[in-house]
Every structure is written in C-alpha cells, then in structure tokens.
Length: 244
Image (tube, rainbow, N blue to C red; front, side):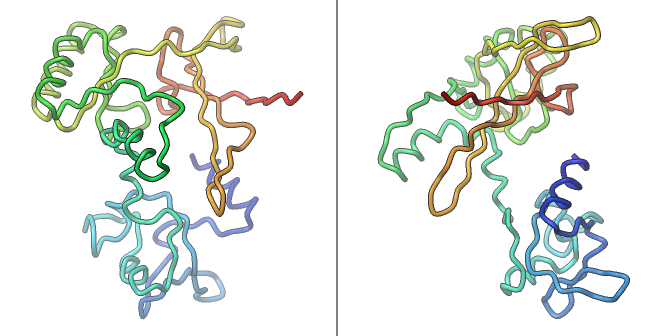
C-alpha cells in the first residue's frame, strides 16, 4: 500500500512519516526534520493499535511512537482513525449491523445481510462443522484474504485442518454461504477472460452522509477465485458511473 500512502500524502500536501520520524516531548508530538523539531497536530495512521505505542500496547513494537497515547489523552494531538476504531473490522460485529441501523436510525435496512453463522454459538458452530465443504469460514480478526477457508475450492486436507482450528477457538470464526460474485471481462495473460469482482463503495460522513458516485472495483485475477484481495493476487478496475 506504499504507493497509495505516497500518492495521498502528495495530493493532500502532508508529510508521510514512520514511527521513528516522530517523538513525544512534554506530551506533545514532534516530527524530526533537517531544520529541527516541528509540532504535529493531526495524525492519520496506518499502524494497528497493538503497534502504535510501545509504552501502552506491545512493548516490543518499533513501528509506533513511544508516548503517543499520553499526548492523545492530553488532547495535544488528534488521531483521525482513533484507537479502537478497528472494532468495525471484526467480522463478528457484522451480524449486528441490521440491529445497529434500527437502533440509531429507527429504520429497517434496505439491503439484507449475508447470512452469518457465529461459531461462538453452539448450534451455529455445529452447522458450520457439518457444512464446511459448502461454506466460507473466516477469522473474525482476519484481513487481506488471510485466515479463511473457501469450502467449495478447498481440499479435504485443508477442510480438516480448518475444522481443527475452528474447534480450538470457536469464538474466533464466523461462517457464511459461498456467494456467486459477479464476473467481468478482464485482460489476463491468456487474453480476455471472465474474472470475479466486487465493488467497494465510498461513503463520506460529515454533517451529512453522502455516497460518492464511484468506488473501488476489486477483481480476483486467479481463474475461478472468489478472493479479490490484493494480498492474494487480486487487482483493481476503473469504476464508471454513467449518468443519464
């Protein structure tokens, strides 16, 4: 993702730094420069919570900045994607989204959730174990296409290996039916061929919530694959919205 980071920093006119470029002094965050220290007021981070501050989280981390959380608590620096926001990426939160919509908005969701089985629940765990060959099973903390089983595309050995992992830590997994993703003509080594895609829309949230006319189309470049993540060999396509 380095290209993305560099591009965004260039377009926004902000500094792109690593943890070692920052230091905390008197509960203020400073950036090291060739002309001395420069005060930092806002940080947009791409470092996981665990690695953000070795004085608070993982003590062996060399990726973050020691003392950053003290500066944050003191109100001397804003962290755009604040500590703890990663809870939204926990896949065991997903089944509760319809209830969140009803609670906060007083409305029924327009789009239905994908049926999701929580392996922490005894009955749903048993259903998952009985149907591993037909389901997609995911680690609740997994990302980038890692820690998941696509049952219809897995070998018997892979299924049994995953069965053991789920049994060892049921609360760490959810399961969903295998969806038939849309496909799109894609230029690959063999020529033009169909490849599965998904669409990630962009939503801007401020005084109002606005859906951006466009989004990120991800494509699974491996033949037959349903995994579109770039870390698993996936790619991207331009997304065109035609207005009449």
